[in-house]
Image (cartoon, rainbow, N blue to C red; front, side, top):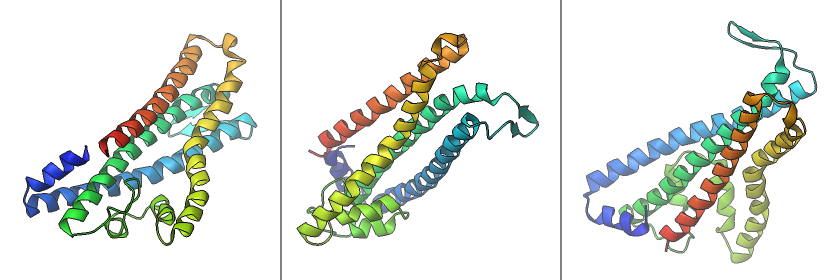
Length: 221
């Protein structure tokens, strides 16, 4: 949603509708925050499972009444499952970023908060107080709070953290796919299809990330 569309929505609706919309956004952000936490834990579990199998520490897997003894076959499908988790994570966080931007504009209008001096990618203190606790948002405020020198230090500290959090899942996928590549000729058609589908999903998630970032920049102009 472009800033002009948000402004048009605010100007064409009464306070009741705007309050309802803001409340709905906050509820959705709470749901996204919960899912983010679950996805993060799930990713860690999948990574641990892969290396437990890789080091022959895990011999079998029991899922309810189902018992899987040949975990080497399961390991081949882990990168595909992990790629789906990455794509899901990118999609919901892109949606979260848009909701944060809308909520920032609404609180600016509804409560007379002056946040025009804060860049669109950051959230002002007042709006952030209404939203679910986010470790990333709390750390990110170091980039703009205080004197410019302090903000510069905050940016230097948080930028590597942002890169690490964004690229670590792709790093693990790269390691796994590189290892599978050398055995690709030995795979059956299902395993080859899984490998190719994994690469396609990862490529799509990267394209989605770059596309949404480009659109976000355009919408803020």
